[in-house]
Length: 114
Image (cartoon, rainbow, N blue to C red):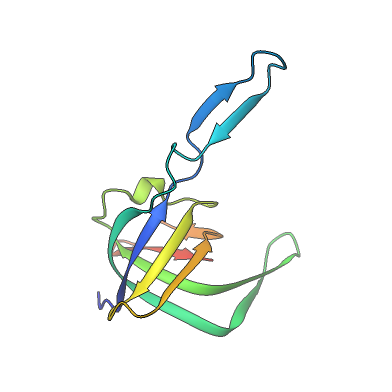
């Protein structure tokens, strides 16, 4: 797989606390605001944003396709709602987005879009 950048990520909410007064559960983002290191990846950017009609009839749009090697150990934490930061190969361009879709069924890579 040809790479043209790298990515960092923040997993979705994993820590759960219960308010003793109300009994409501609240969730936190792993207790950290720092990005976790990803790996090299192939980044595809669409301008204007791609639009896809969902099975429910709703129109979805996204600007990034990111292809991550299957061997990446944190691939199980990359799910809808997680935050991704993509960095160009030369390090001059950085963009952030929330994952809107994941395709883990390809044998060579995991595809994310958002």
